[in-house]
Length: 262
Image (cartoon, rainbow, N blue to C red; front, side):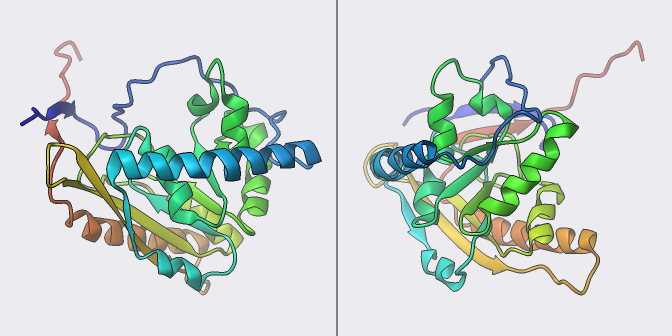
């Protein structure tokens, strides 16, 4: 049997295991989130509907024998919505949301690192990559973009922020990203990727469970709404995480080194 890869961590909120290192692009007030150019629209359709979706479906089926449970729940909402998920797959986290949210287009909120490649940035943007702003002056454009895109699309967010490959639990996350559905009065869903061993060999099978829709209690202050939505999503994801049947990676907690000079 293949030996599990070990990861050592000390901070569930901030430790990162993607192994990606690149010069990060600055997303300022000049960055254009929403394009009205008809040629860009044509490019979006071709890149997403003709290239991305078929590739994502084939990749997920071959790589993960991917299965979705609860997709019918998405039919309860006719408008756009916000989708939250556990961040545990290097390639899969880029492709699975497109299949989960289909036929809606997925707009993934990403760190600027994700569009800081030497090549391919335009293709990622055509496929819905929506980078977080790097400067306060860019925040207004980002918020306006989420407002517009969430009218009909699915806004994909990974609240854990940092990727932990094949981690089978749900890491604690803050309510910060839940201010968006509260602000725009949009429903919230979540999906949880769970990991299983195939009948033959050591390869991975991924089963995705969808939960929701969850709604904010508009009778309460905004901050309380954000916390309640966060708790509903976190609870649902923790329950689904119990359905994992195999660990493909081992995570070991270690204490941070103590500087004796302080």
